Image: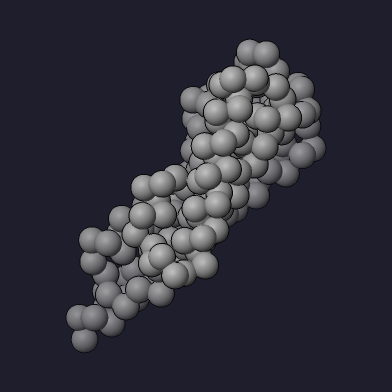
Length: 172
């Protein structure tokens, strides 16, 4: 989190927001290590989710506001896609935790799904692959899954069209 906010100008409100979320993340992580508990984990997960969403929005603004296709624009576009996968994985983790049995094929330990399983399911869904080894069965889990598929496909279509348009405009 600290590295992510490093490049933001200090007087910007986004720097203050990012710093506050990073400080909260460190604080909740320390409390979680020392004391644990579901309330602390929920607070930490919420902070990470908010930080990831704000990072994705900031990166998307830079990517969609780009004027020419260069390395930074391409890396930014990849970062937005990866952050989308992380955000959805966090949402699936919360769903799994609060609605046990909401996914078939996802095994949890202590009421929580492993992060690698959540990320795997999220990126398989984001890409629209849908292998079928993990399936959403609860209505909320299904709704999240189809929203992720739609957002992943729209992002790829819009991003590709935008990059091609920028490239062709710059060539002229």
